[in-house]
Image 1: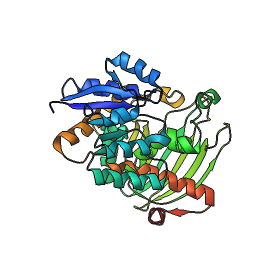
Image 2: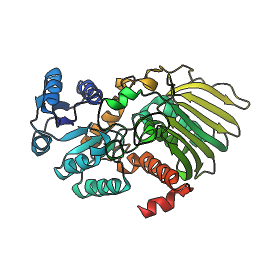
Image 3: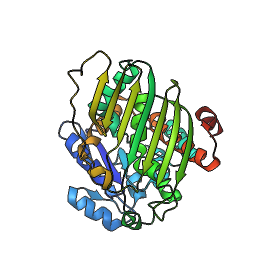
Amino acid sequence: MSKLRHGIIGCGLISTWHAYAINELSKTMPIQLVGAADVRLESARDFCAKYGVQAYETIEDMLNSDEIDSVSICTPSGFHADLAMQAAKHGKHIVVEKPMAITTEQLNALEDTCKQNHVILTSISQMRFLPNIQRARKAVQGGELGKMLCGDVYMKFYRSPEYYGQSNWRGTWKLDGGGALMNQGIHGIDQLLYIMGPVKSVYARCKTLARKIEVEDTASVVLEYESGALGVIQGTTSVYPGYPKIFDFNGELGTIKMEEKHFIEWKVKGKGTPSDIVFTRADPNGANRPDGNDMGEHIPQLNDFFCSILENRPPMIDVKEGRRPVDLILAIYESSRTGRLVDMKEFANRG
């Protein structure tokens, strides 16, 4: 095998992010985008004509093909786990868009299936690879802010009624797995966990206040981290006109504020701003448009994925890491349903 041959399952909006990243990486790595498949054959043909690759008649044809070594799964969320398990059983290494699964049962089954079939899986959490996110994690975990007191994220996005009306899967439990947190908010939650560390317990209220959907369009959550720090998650898809994510990391000696991936404040008692910190503001497009995020952000994670195959090592975000934000969101939903505080270890043991 001279090159890793990659296919894409699902030819909707997010597939273009994957195709772009793979084509960029193919300039310097032995990888190649060779084909795509979709339940709508016409969508696959249009996508493949754009990128000059093979359109497979069915997803099963792609997974059965000896010409495919790995796949990206870019379908609606409710299909992620089943398709990933099918790919694993065919010996294909897997990139799966967020969330990697939408139930605890799916998460457990997917983890077992990948282990049994000796395949590598990475779940898209591209924000972890960005330099500013790495720097914030280093500051928090390394004690630059002193003892951590608070770690919060505020995600006040806007998705119009028309957005939900464009498809029959958006805003449903079966195929979206949740709303403002599971779909739009999962990257912010993953970023929060990556910087602050594991959560001990959650107490949440999730409501559908403005959209005619099954799942939540508004949520407020109180967290206790294993470190003892406290935190807040607020997520909504109904605040007009929509705003970039805001992160607050507060220690007894200082504070870091971020707007998406950008630093907007860095204050530590008795110290100036570090020389490697640059203050900038976020483009607000991602807060009110699904296609408003930076296409290049997938490149570092896909680079790590392909290197993990070539080097026979785990990826930075493997199955266990990929499930962390999903486990937390599922615990949040459990708390909201029951009106009770949920202990994360007890919740995991029940799963």
